[in-house]
Length: 618
Ligand SMILES: NC(=O)C1=CN([C@@H]2O[C@H](COP(=O)(O)OP(=O)(O)OC[C@H]3O[C@@H](n4cnc5c(N)ncnc54)[C@H](OP(=O)(O)O)[C@@H]3O)[C@@H](O)[C@H]2O)C=CC1
Ligand SMILES: CC(C)=CCC[C@@H](C)[C@H]1CC=C2C3=C(CC[C@@]21C)[C@@]1(C)CC[C@H](O)C(C)(C)[C@@H]1CC3
Image (cartoon, rainbow, N blue to C red; front, side):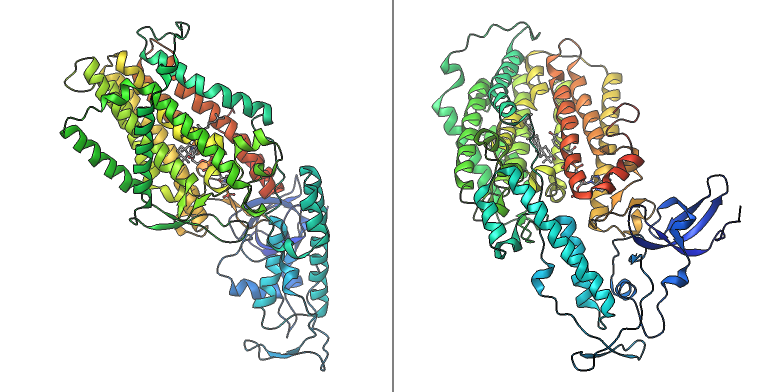
């Protein structure tokens, strides 16, 4: 058998597996058993590659007087989306172009001093506008190349690009046809196929996937969640909180009081007022289908501070805040009614929204399903963003407020001079979590819910009702079920919460910093996978440990928040079970989206990082 053609340390070009793209590499070693080279790409990715996929650098070097567009581009770009250098198509080296002196502009390449005359095949700007994310990226890369190159290369190369553009158009046409055939939207279908004009700005083709079991699942969730919440709140108020000790004797008055609804509406109005205050920096959301980015006022911390001051003033004037605890069921029912009214309003207004303003699920034609999932992505009244307000201000500030009410109620009912250690720890852990979320509010803008979900019943009910009233269940339980915990247990719980928080925080920080700037020198120790859609995926550090390390941290914290409630009842562990279930389900939703966006690059990532949340378990 002949020896290896390349030696350790040699530079060469290697074909990226599954593609026709060649990138510069360095040979690390050769394994004579497997006949594979271990190579290092310029972005730090290590891989084993066979000899037939490796080419000498010379083959890719342009002849004198000709510089390949890809090389030229790699000089002008500050950030490459590929490993190391911009890829070179697997084709023979660029030839000196044939020229047509009559029709070609003459351009001087100042770096080489050569004069090249090229024949330009005119490409219209709309040739570069496509709908699919992958397609869009591929074509805009060519468009960029076209714009950036002062010397347009040989006719042959342009022909290759044109061919690719044509292929993309055909692909796009087929994808669009399939997409609209699936969604059975005949009118839209006709419009897009017959009239090419509106194709410019259509929403990226995202195959709608039916979540939560479709209309049936959505109906079940909508009908079961409100009674489940009242059941949980009712059990917390019972002396015996064991789950089976449930004898409902509710009357309409137990759930409804107009005055309570008035107070709740006032609370929401106050939060809205704080939301609209022109205090705090402006941040920008992820790019929308139109290419625009919405701006958001980041003032959640200010709002929480103002609410804190207001509560202090009310306490100072001896205003009875325990009214909230005494009417907790009615407050939860008022919040539910408001969430239903809000969902109905959102549904009606979404009928006026254009296709590109709708979420993927929102394009379904099923009324119940879209009512639940939400149709419009970013419903706004002027500058007031309804979804952002409900997820940040109504949910998180509401949660902290109800927790604090429980703390006051515990002191009152158990005649304590100061809250119990359990109550303080539950309040402190959750306040800290909310403060962290509000401090890092900007990163929330790229979360699944804010960036990709429509605003419907799920998020309206989840944020206005579920988060404030169900997430505060541990505190509600402690009001009537005192638990003595030793310093040792408390220390262990604090350690567990800190452990979860460190994972949660550092995983989110790693991802956010990497998304902001993949070339951040502070992240240079992390490996990443280049992807065909342009944004690389982290494949080491926390994101190389499991695929959703932030969920792991969140789940550890969730259980740590339940432990101060002792082991007498299962009820206060509801949050632990709920969040674990919610995040496991969320994994499948996020991964579906990632598989659509990154296609086989996501599979590559899953292969490298096989576990989702907990190594060797899930
Ligand atoms: N307490 C609660 O009730 C809840 C808490 N949360 C918390 O909110 C936060 C946001 O959650 P969520 O939006 O669901 O999820 P993530 O913050 O994990 O965001 C998922 C996105 O991250 C990007 N991504 C995934 N893998 C990688 C990788 N390897 N490298 C780089 N980017 C990657 C992808 O987006 P892209 O391709 O666009 O970059 C993906 O769509 C989490 O911390 C979660 O724990 C969430 C829901 C409920
Ligand atoms: C079907 C079902 C179980 C519905 C209810 C789900 C809701 C409880 C959650 C849906 C998305 C949520 C988000 C948060 C809380 C839970 C709900 C409402 C969130 C506000 C928690 C804090 C995070 O930092 C967040 C802002 C990213 C998050 C947004 C989504």
